[in-house]
Length: 324
Length: 272
Image (cartoon, rainbow over all chains, first blue to last red; front, side):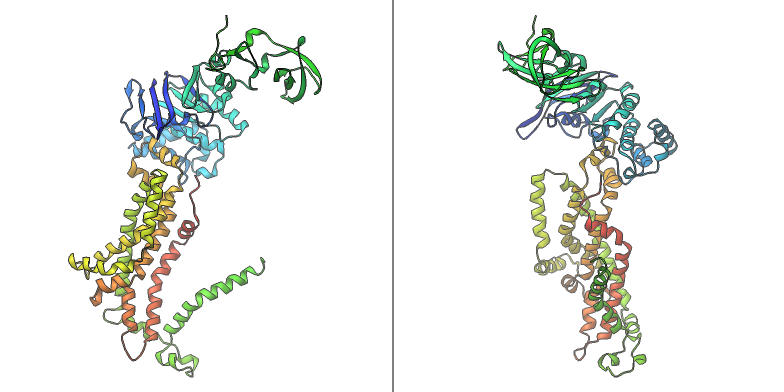
């Protein structure tokens, strides 16, 4: 189990991470989700020991990591750039850490061969990283983390350098190789879809602080703040003009065409395949709606939704208003 | 444009290589032929200058050896100090890095000739005169600023994440240098090493004042002695032969490290 206690880091007087309290249980994958610059990568670097916290502490399996240098923390990290050693072949990339740890050559060979076949790179063992495709490099990086036999996995945007198709292919790989293991996994990403797809729980970060921690369903159904409501869910939530002092959000997928509803003018649409995204304009501003029926731009149509799908937020604190 | 390029290259090559060719021809021409253009072509050539040099006392190869020893030692010493220092500096905060770069840059630009009297005093004080190993110390010291600047840039060109990844693989600072960083900055290290070696190979004022025993002279001092051995004549032939012999080790070195030097000079970085 990985436990972060009021973790904080500042550069000069500016806190880039503050009050980070988080537990990642055995076998659990928690995603740190947030826009760039929200401090999520800093959190990983603190856990890895690459930077030192200015506040709070980190516990791994009940022991504090204070004062333990990065070299001696048993951490399997995958970097966004993969950080493979460019002068070494795939095999030597995997071998370096084992060699330094003093493992016997025969045993090293055996372990590397096993990992190579796990990540399906047996035929690429003698190639240099520059001769590999992006997906292959990523698998080498995963293999290197696996070989470390770590107590925790830290994945820093491991898929953001890959194109969409490759990402879809690698997601099951990632699940098979790392997420199904017993180690806690902390997964940093700015892609809410990726976080929803892979993580058991998601911690949404904003300006160095946690906005909300919860399962993907909880974040989607009951966003705790206006920010989370806007960050989770694509296409983005619609914000309606304030009524009775509350900000009201309604998701595009919860709107439906209704003859008796308010009238909106269709000003644009995007075909998504199974349905289309309609962009509408009305007295209360703009609205996006997911809809499978065929409408033409310029048409006026009625829209309605069920009040239970509305999300209400306090306009000042931006916190969720509970509605009975 | 493209068709005339070989021509331009040929012209440039002739322009830069002609003086060396001239030296080579001079070194193979007999002393009489050097001052008398009427001597027929077949009778102009001789190896006498080389014979003279190599059978002198001490023989010329002795100076070559001295210079190689001093050059090699200075280079080794400089790199031993500069590589870890550059690594440390390259990992500092940008503000401190800028300050250090400015100071080191100033040191690199300082005309070292102004120092040689003071250095001579030091040599006398610590009895380091006439000692080939000791002269590598001021050479390394003087070459250090430039070496630092070159190597800091090389380290800065490496992505920090490589260093981080190596740490997480369990590599301490020495292991990281040995297995990850040094191999990646090898081109820069090679070109830096050659520059330091060249400096030591060519250095004159310090060698002139620190070394006086005949068998300990380095090349530049020995060659100056050959050139000034007689007040009545300049021994062009012997001097040219010495130049040719003195260039050979450098030529070999540069040819051996050709690829690294070019890579080191053109690099901003190693691709990550």
